[in-house]
Length: 213
Image 1 (tube, helix red, strand yellow):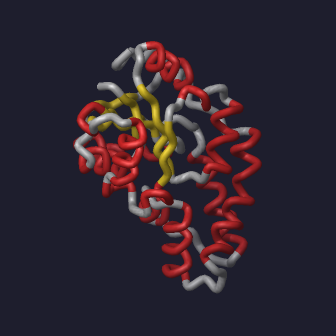
Image 2 (cartoon, helix red, strand yellow):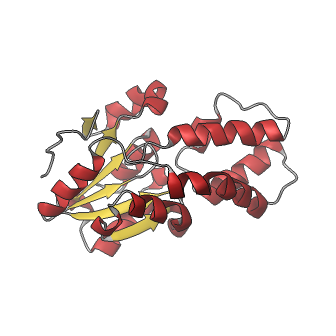
């Protein structure tokens, strides 16, 4: 393995609770009930794709750009000031870097959100490249965003490992012919079994992790 590709929300960032709160507030403010299957339905989608899905499913009168803007404003302060790395994640990234591994971010987040959070947590400069699902114009499960990152790293897919917390991300890693590493997150615990069956590795914590270092 020559390169490690990391998702952010739920994988490196302990941030999924923020999104659960934003979803609840967004729906409540519009007099709607948050469906139990909503989080699973949007898993792996980009900001814009999620807005398109939400607008169509709930027949919202807002524009897609308007929905994206509202979500962005609701979470920007959290990413700039409060979102933290998972325990041990920063130390593990530094171990990989010292071992000569290339590092990439693969995320559904926009640059305006991920950049300040990574910089505040002191790990932004560890990454060689960044790739988003908006850039790949495809769902994570297609594998296109991981292939985009591998291309930017100039590394063959079969020499890349993908760290993800959702089944759709694991599916995408396998579709891209990469090693798939599932990272535990308590907010996705109810959907863990399906992802574990497909993953090549399962990681409960970064603390003390020596994989590929």
